[in-house]
Length: 381
Image 1 (spheres, helix red, strand yellow):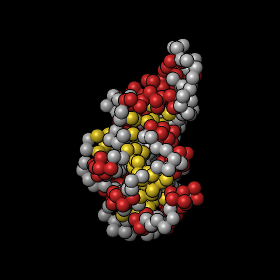
Image 2 (cartoon, rainbow, N blue to C red):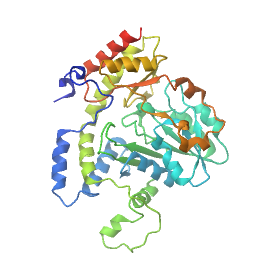
Image 3 (cartoon, rainbow, N blue to C red):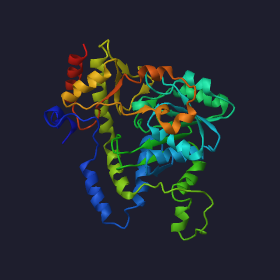
Image 4 (cartoon, rainbow, N blue to C red):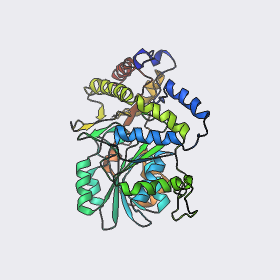
């Protein structure tokens, strides 16, 4: 069944905020994989990495892992971050962006959001740089690319690493370059509700090929897996590694998702553009979007902002339309409090109680999107 042939979700059980995409082919692939000797990390992981690299990384090597969080942790380690270093990170993001920094003991300097996109704010970043700053982490919120030229200029001036959290940005481009390939490192997520899924998984792109083999060792206890399988490993571990590998079961789902990716992205962008075109005329609603033509969104989610956010959310729920805020400002969590003393985030303060995420996924139709817009217009007029 194609996306267009799906019935109106509101005529069934409602329109959910998220819905995973799993192709029928992947079910066959999993069954086939279960009948081989490889259900953990095996040849399908290599095949998935190669296909992903061809599609998004200009054929550069990459390292698949168990989650996007794993990918970020490896990126931070490969970037040489250590206890006491300062890193500038967005205050608004999934906690997966910033929690791995706590593993290392890094001092987090939270930056405010750009009120138009909810991405990291460049002016805020500039004010946070000190002689101890080692890296900047940027998150492409909802699939909207960050201001990469400005970030690269800052990184060059101060000799800083740029780490892209591209968990929501697969398929997005900036100046025709794929998101996740512009900075020093790019971390992708294949968690259940992302564009494609491996059940749960992630992948790390690395600008310098010299670090790829190290990343592969770190994802498997510090062991050189290739040498071990060839029987030439000297049975020594010189680096602290982790159990961050992807499995062939996950890779079999992910590979099939890659085969359908163009169709998935095209459909999500259609839903996104319906919202954009129909809601931008409403003066009571602010669209979280970037109209810069050098940026193309991955359309993972569509976010609006309005004073009547809670009222709208409740009224849409009565219509069996699920909406939510999804991510929250990290400075509100106890684990990050020590980094937030006397810090102010005026843009985040302004948006905190106003933003709301609308459904965007392959299990809804274009008619579903039109229906949601009609309901919003009736409620907010």
